[in-house]
Image 1 (tube, rainbow, N blue to C red):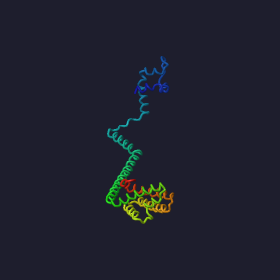
Image 2: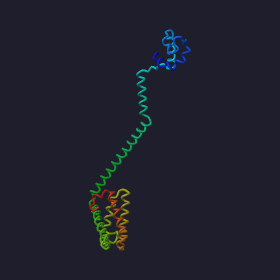
Image 3: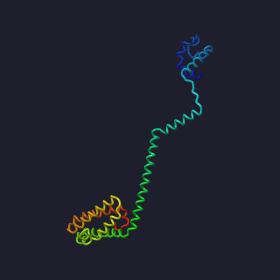
Image 4: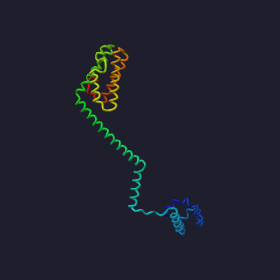
Length: 231
């Protein structure tokens, strides 16, 4: 308690001068520390100041302190950032589950499609013949030799090879996208045959590109792109 009074003596001394009698031998207020009769008064005054400025200590048990620290830690972990992380983790878990289900479904479809392809050798043969025919027709059109292209295509879409190709396309087409490409191919093929018969080179080129593009997209969608040679 005396240490506190000495360390703060400079700030408190002016107010204490009126409480102590002046000494003839010393004009400095610091002389009060050497006067024994006033030592008790000084200690009493310091004690009063200390008690008035500092509240009494609060006694806390070790168990209470532990509970308080634990609660603070839990609250900090369950704050806004913690809640955000938890919600994000839940969303990520749901996304992972949906992705896993999608992967399983896609794998199941691929296996079913592969089984269909493996068991449909005749239809694959029809499609392989179509690849060869399109290659020959493309070469003939490139040379402006439309009679040669007509000899490969035939006079209309009622020929056997066109019917066989359509049966294969229908068998392997499952999704709406695949069926849409089949429609685009059939429409372009009909235009190609008609343009070749009319000896219209430009229209033949345009129809040939449209037919080849639709067929290529279809083979990609169905997985047959790797089963046919020349693509």
